[in-house]
Length: 186
Image (cartoon, rainbow, N blue to C red; front, side):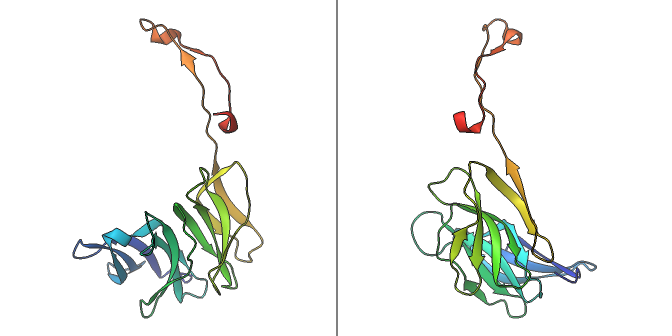
């Protein structure tokens, strides 16, 4: 939480039948389930973000509408546990949610179903619309965060290298690399 007295996390529900968003005290051994969803529509543990005013938690979860395993962003009221679907745009994965300082939106890392690489996205908290912040061959991962004034964004990137090697079957220690390629040539 913004006052660092509480933290939010995802875990199994108390009865083991679902996925719960919990709030716990930073200084005591207590926790409470804020909201629970069935395992079929479970929360993503890598996408929990507390709003700067401490009143709302943004979280990704498997959509309860549509085909396949789609992820969407939801908002949960900290006081009452009311959950509201924010986005209708479907993502293959969502991570690294971060609130803009004024609460008008979120940034996130997400990949659509047709994408290999996760990109940076903006989500409006007013109407749930999404727009891509960037489009590149770079794959972004969690965590993602914003500076308190919203002027800087931090994200993790990952690059893959793929190469072929050959070696005699009786002497694998004599392997020789025969290609050199970066992610784009994999």
